[in-house]
Amino acid sequence: MSVPPRGVPRADVLLRERTDGERRRPTLVWECGPGWTMISSGVVGGGLGERRWWVNGQVDLEYYEPDPVAHLRRIAGDLGLEGPGVGLLTAADIRRRTTADDEGIHVVATVGLGLPVFAAETSERIVAETRPPGPGTINILVVVPVTLSDAALVNLVVTVTEAKTQALAEAGVPGTGTSSDAVCVACPARGATSGDPHGDPHGEPYGGPRSLWGARAARAVHTAVAAGTADWLVRCPEGDPVRRWRA
Image (cartoon, rainbow, N blue to C red; front, side, top):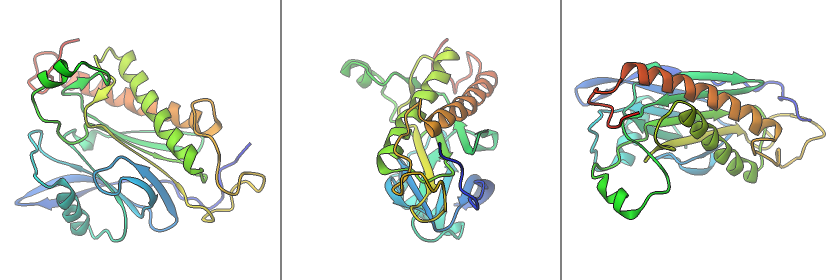
């Protein structure tokens, strides 16, 4: 069994403000620095590799920026972030972020449910959803305190998504997510920590829901997304123009 390595800092995700045109907007920022590997579906820094920061920037509900990549890079520059990082966007109120911890795992989630969708739908139904997909409305950051193999990181993205969908189903949300949800999983890079001397030198091999770290991540994600979903449903009851669906 693996144990959290000594010296791995807790993810210190801060709520900061940025200047966006003539407006001040809230932004979640984690400056982790070197020594971290992230896998993400983010607009900026997507894929797998070394990343030194993570940003989740709030934008307008009617967001039609023609170049979101350039926009996110401006946001990172305005915040003084350098080097490779992960950038996400959301129309959800990030000041109402939810967090959860489970035996070394730390999760931050921002939840918005204006238009939930089921992943598998007919072409006709997809065409009927005429509104262009906006920035990700359920964004999730998962910080794991031990090094994971590349395969385990991929596996953990699946586990995180399953846990998110479980929370939505339990809340009666008619969808598996929104059309542009995003996820980021971070762990110490190989050689960055001492870890378990009996563990795999290439990182923990598994990230499924019944693996040690997968199970912990699933519980934390489920807790954070469930809390964020409950909060959103209270603030946006049926009839609210932001909520484009019925229970």
